[in-house]
Length: 232
Image (cartoon, rainbow, N blue to C red; front, side):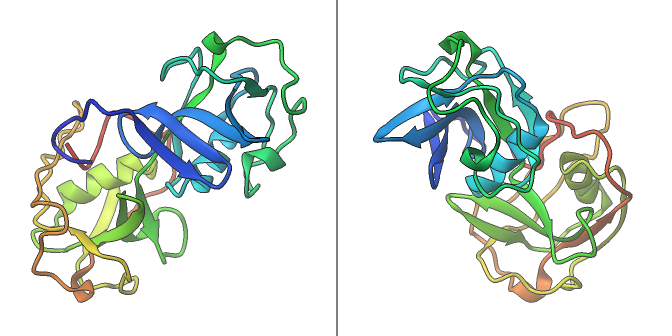
């Protein structure tokens, strides 16, 4: 979420699952913990429902995309799960149907990965409207409504897979958040033909209160885009 890339390997852990090797806290190779060891998940039958369960389990928002063929690099431990099949409502990937721990015909070239959204809409009437929140450093926080406009909302609506922005407000219409106010003075170009990187003040540097939390209403669910992002 910061404007600079780190050379460190990112690891995000939630209960008995973690994401390793991604570019941020909400992407990476999927690894599960079983009998004292971390191991990977084979990409056989890996789909967006499986990814949604993992994203929710590690504390991120919905899955943006799934990855196969060791997209985030090959793991070094055992391959613990194969032919995973989640409905999408499970609390943990280990609750999903699978072949059994360690029962697989895969190699690490087939390690599964996910990219989860780090933006969510909260307290609305559905998935496509609500208070804008972002995930940073292990917690969810809000966005201040200073200079908030339709171009900013367009980027958020696209990233959460909800089409076009229909309206905005910065009066905490969908309630006040209770985490930190993480972003202020967001400025997006709104260019729909290219990947969008938005300017903003330093994280957690703001003069706003939760009364100014930004909110949006989007048109509805469409295919999720990976390239458009609210942050550099």
